[in-house]
Image (cartoon, rainbow over all chains, first blue to last red; front, side, top):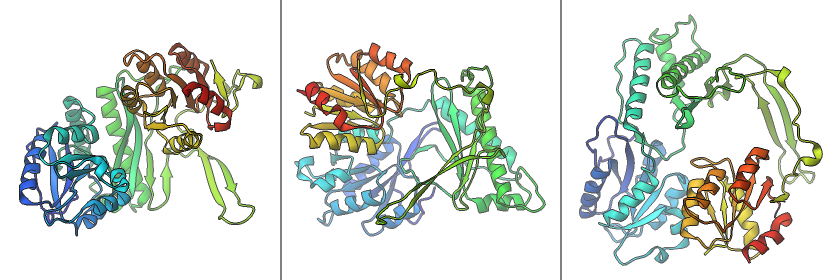
Length: 337
Length: 121
């Protein structure tokens, strides 16, 4: 976990291996309220971490895998925390903020800025309302337990077979609302089964993998390792995990219309090095667009549009659309039925 | 109660369409995907018009339209698809679900405002 142990753990609920948790931050709000929250968190499988008004922004800057934040409208010293809620929302707009209000207060009693900053309010002790918020904004999706167990098994087996002499530790799976990338290197590959479609990412730090390669503990053993070898390791890990998931869960994925196997190749991005690989040495077709302000009030905008057809390229089958020009509906026009 | 519901996963589109309609005196609510759209139409059954994208996460726009007509049982709200798609098959599916119109993006408010005003009247 990225949250430093110097910050107090409020709850660490008991959970089965397939149960999904969620890390939340709780702003200090008095022993009685914290005790109530603690019970609620344990029931809801929320990993609660205590923070203060003075250290919360620092905690947020070093933790990127959070689910949400519980803030009291008034802290135990009688001070308002709504400005803090607004500040947190500005730096982390993806993190839902749940505001605990005093009994008798309503949403309309809060300023418009506060209402916009929080996703919901609850009265301390109103467990039904708190549960509703948690179910809506955190645990809005149920993941089949066999699927969770399967992902862990498949990925763990591949990692153990890919790195020599390592001890593998697997945290409980957890929900994240942050959209922040960990490390400077990640792979991206579509995942498709007959019941779900989306993406898998593997995010990591380049230096750590490079160290393993240099120590001859990784998949490959090049004489002079460089960052491209790291990409190769990441690409192969992604491929093997994707294959494992497809073999176990994706037996009904559609083939394309030619009957060809539906190929997927992981995309590798190293944003620190501004590097992207589609797993192919084919050239990229590139268009450059420059948006220029004739009055020179704004700087020119350059957009590079690139195509890399690494998954399929059959130009002999290219054909213009059968629609005649007159049949095409121009963008922006309303076609009434 | 909002007169129009704009359903699109793009914040830019929601902002553009709702901004234009609001400037023309029309009350607007927004939804971020088809699932959210279903929730909003259930809580606001008097909505007169829905602008709906097709390609959205969680639930696409055509599925949302079909569910509005069947599961929610709202057969009266006018629905116009606002989408990058122009596929004839999708349009047929939309027509079968009772949509009133189809706009291929980008949105041009001037082209549609008179029709919109009639639909929300």
